[in-house]
Length: 301
Length: 272
Image (cartoon, rainbow over all chains, first blue to last red):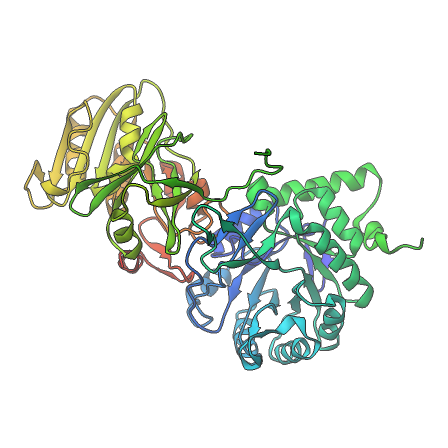
C-alpha cells in the first residue's frame, strides 16, 4: 500500500502524531519498524521548556486528557538527536511551535537546515504578542505565521490545526493561501477538565487539558470533511483513529494520510501495522484502492 | 451506583493507613486496599496539589500494599511526611514486572532503596535464593529483619558486613556456589550495569529494573524512552537480551524537557 504524499512515497498512510513517543531517533525507528509510514518528532520550541508537573496524562477510558505542556530541549539543544537522525532510513516530520511569529520562523528555519522530510507547525499555541490568543483560531494570525515560516524553510510545510477554531475550514484555506503544502487536523479537543471528587482538585496539574482518542473522532471526521471541501492540498486526518475502519472513515472524509496517537495506548506500539493491515484487508475485500474512497463522503446525494 | 459505561484509569483515591519510618530518609506508606500486582511493577502516586511520581510496590498482601519512599526531592520529602488519613491518588500498577521461573537457583542483588521492588520478589521466589544487599551504612539497610533467608551484606563505610560493592559479593557467590540460573538486580544504574557486565562474562542471564522520568505510565508520551525501549510500558524490568542492545543503559537519559543528557547529570537533577 505505498502511497505518495507530496514529494515522498510512504510505505502506508499511517502517521505517528506529534507528542506521542517521538522523543528520540531510537524510538522513532521502532515506531517505523512497527509499521508506521511517517513519524513525527516531538514538538520543538524556541527555549528549553520542562512542560507541566504531573499528572499530565490521564486515561478516561474513551480517550485521554493531557496537559503535558509542550516540553522541549529548545531548538538549539538537540545536536545529538540531529546527528543521529541524519543517518535514518525512514521519513520524519519535525514539529515546531512558538509564542510569536518570529519564534516560529526562527525555530523552523533552523530545523529546516537539519533536513527533516517535512516540517509541521503546531498553531494551537497562544500568541504572546496578542494577549495569548491562539494563533490557529484566527485567519490573520494563522496566515501570518504560515507565510513567515514558509519563506524560511526548504522542506514541505504541514500546518496542524486546532478544532478550537470557530471555522476550521476557513483557517485551512488561509493557511493554503499563505503557502502551506498540507494540513494536519485535528489537534486535541477542548480544553477539558477532570476533577477528583475526593480531594476536590482538578487531576491534571495544569488543571485543563486536551482530549484525544475515540471520544473525539466524530469531531475530527467533521473537521476533515469541512477542510477537504475548502482546500486542494492534502490532509493528514487524525483524532481518535483506533482501527482500520476508523482510518477508512477518515479517508472518506477527505484525508490522504491518517494520524495515530492515543491508539498506542489501547492497541500497543504495533498499532500502525495493525491499522495499515486492516485498511488493506477492508479495501481488498471490496476490490477498492485508497484513491477510490478518498473523499467518498463528499459524493452527490 | 450505576456501573460505569467505560473504564477510566483516573487516580484511585486512598487514605494512608500507616506511615512506617524504615531508616533515616526512608518511609513506607501503607494502604488498606487489594491491588492486583506482580513484583517489579509500579504505581503513579499523586499527592493532590503537588505532583505525581512513579513508585514500586514494596509490600503486598491480599488486602494491603505499601510503597517505600526515599526522601530526595520536593515530592519525596512531602511524601514521607504524610500521616494516617492523608489522601493519595494511585494509578496502575503499570509495567511488566520480574519474570519468575519456578525452581531456579537465583541471586537477588539490591543496592540502597533498590531493595524496595525486590522485596516482594524475594518473598515470592520459590527456590534457592541468595540475597545480596548493599547500603551506604548499617543505618540505611532497608527491611533488616524482613526475610527468612540470610542476606549477604556490604556497606560503603564498612559499618556492617563486607566493606565494598555488591558486585564483590556476587562474584564470590558465582565463583564459590552452585550455578546460578538468574540474577535479579535493582539499585543505582551503575551498580546494575556492573551486575549485568559480570553476569555477561559468566554467562548468567539477569533482569534489572530501570528508572527514568515518567509522565503517562502507559507508553504513549515518550518521556521515559531508553534506547528503543519505553521504560514505563516495556519495562521497568529488562533482561540481558534487551540490555545488550540498549545503548542508553548506564549512559544517557532524558530530562523533563526531553533533553538528552549524560546519566550523571540526569541523576543530579532527579535528586533535587
